[in-house]
Image (cartoon, rainbow, N blue to C red; front, side, top):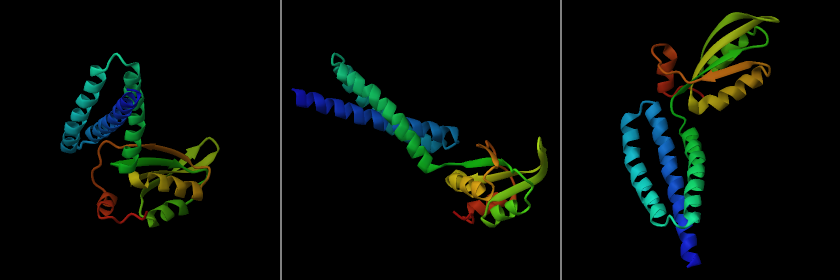
Length: 180
């Protein structure tokens, strides 16, 4: 009896981890505009959801099943986010303000394949350089490391652009010319 109860808890836990991972991925796909892929993932998500919820509802008198369902949900959120990080869909825009005006910094980044627009800026303590850099999300951390290596005191802000249109750099990235 105890062995069957343990198996039920493990099955419910695993099912909910998978379900919530699919849910998280589907939501990201939806937000990024991958409609058909999101719809495809949702089919499996719902099947898994119905099976998992059915197991819990059929055994609602056993609190360990409800706890397994809740814990599986929490773990599933983390697993789904980790999967999404690995997928790294879309682009990221990184705004950088350097401590000092350094004409070499944008050129070094361009040589590495990043699209950089830079301009002179003025901060509280003097001249600065502002840069706007667009990169695929899969290169985001590498870009941060490169910037910090070139200017450890650089101020960095990143966000995801909703729409991208025009420019030479986007074509180059789609052809795989960015160095990793």
